[in-house]
Amino acid sequence: MTDPKPTLAVGMVGHAFMGNAHSQAWRVAPRFFDLPLDPVMRVVCGRDAGRAAEAASRLGWEESSDDWRAVVARDDVDLVDVCTPGDSHAEIAIAALEAGKHVLCEKPLANTVEEAERMVAAAERAAARGVQAMVGFTYRRVPAVALARQLVAEGRIGEIRHVRAQYLQDWIADAEAPLSWRLDKSKAGSGSLGDIGAHIIDLTQFITGLRITEVSGQLETFVKERPVPAGETAGTLGGGGSSGELGPVTVDDAAVFLARLTSGAIGVYEATRFATGRKNAIRIEVNGSAGSLAFDFEDMNVLEFYDATEPAETAGFRRILVTEPEHPYVAAWWPAGHGLGYEHGFTHQVVDLVHALAAGEAPRPSFADGLQVQRVLAAVETSSDTRSWQEVAS
Ligand code: SOE
Image (cartoon, rainbow, N blue to C red; front, side, top):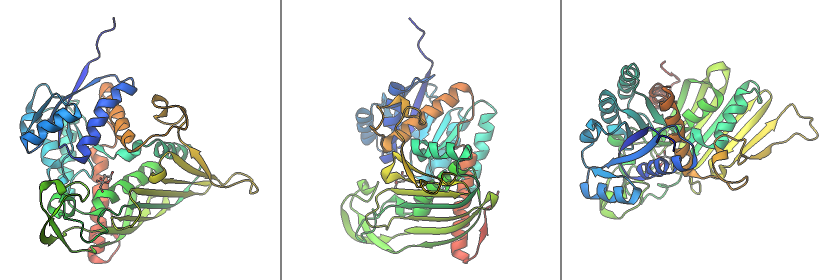
């Protein structure tokens, strides 16, 4: 008999949409991938004891709690997984790091640059003690996205000139869709900009290896008041009944910006919750001197590749079905052509994190990577407010 693997006991704070996705990942990752540590789903935490207990039994956690401070202090928890709205990320993540727990924190890292800076400082102090921190930009782990990064790094599209990125949703296009925490600046920090714009900032920088250095942005709130929801459950993406009253929307509905990137590339970014008919369309196209790459999350098992070095008679965009065992992450799953979905990115996130922890290496994206995205978000907001180009602080 082989010795049992060392364990990694997880305490997760928050059990709504992201908590469900993370729970699935912690449960499934060790069943499909050979991990060096065995994740133990120790405790799930939420503000309401009854709902946390229900989440524990439904999602497969050993215990539940209504006190995140107690979870962070437990000797039998090695990692704290932060799946709460942005207004509590800094407090929970910093407390966990100070208590010697590794941290996985949902994106965007924080609601402000100042909070993100404090989180990076805490992560640096913790790293000196072998404690690691990672921010959850999970779309990096979609196989087609990881393949795009690989092709760029191999020089297959040459020198990058254009970055074109959109994140399109429509879940509040209806003016009667109720308020939720995602529409409240004090809880979410910003609207489309931070919630989904942060993803395309991270993704384009991840794929290209470039950094956004300067932006010119425009934010808009189309619907300034919305029905106040009847109960707390209206939360995740606009469900639930209305109380009949109206309340203010305090974040942007849509955010667009132009960007300059290191190396002289230029970029166009668009994040909106008002693209009627587009549900979760993350569209990225990168044009280089030797070719182009294009990705759309609504067709997430495909990467389009144009190789400009091919003879003109036969050159053309080809659809690479990213389901071969040779492709990133895919060998652990289904036979070629059978495809993966939204949840697999979260599973791959757990896989990469567990490997980094076992090797004593810093996982990516780091809190410093999250701070850099936060600085881009802040520059876009200032640019929109002042109607001027803004440099991204470094
Ligand atoms: C809502 O817009 C949301 O759930 C984001 O918060 C997630 O990060 C994204 O993956 C899907 O949409």
